[in-house]
Length: 216
Image (cartoon, rainbow, N blue to C red; front, side):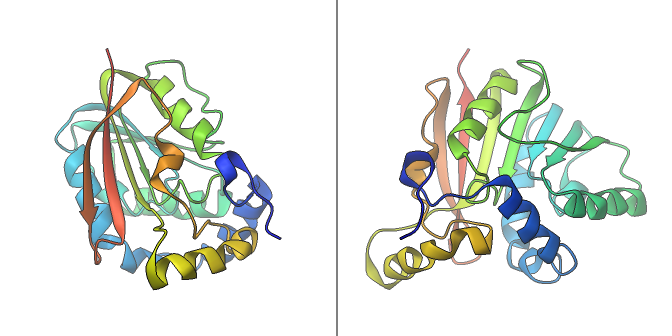
């Protein structure tokens, strides 16, 4: 039987995440990176409608970093030092002056003061973090009133072949380093974050972009 964690989700701990992304880091950009390229562009295009300080939670190898506009001052955080090393190489290679910091940090305990950022993004992260509820609450905490939180993620379905496959794969969540079975309700947990839009994004609508506004 699969262990269950936050809100009945398959349990994943920080060591699972670090181990999984140590394996993934050398090939991430050439594999998963290609698959999510269109989704990354959709999220960053929306983020570029805003200005000010932006935090990207789960910045990984920095796939999104070149797509943020110069009006955004970007801080990226990630739990994986292997992924962050590649993100730093990318920033150095492309000379991105608007990236202020890339920090090893736990998204369930973000080491920034309340209301530090105008925009927060988290792409393909919520199925990976040990406690997505805590992450959502931290995103709400560090975002300014009236600010924007953008979440792009795969959300599971209950019915059909896809639903059956996701349930079957959920037993391997710790080994995979992510949760195949992950309903959207798992992150609709913060009263101070108002969901203002829900948009399927490429490829094939497999990912969904959720836009939240921090209540004033």
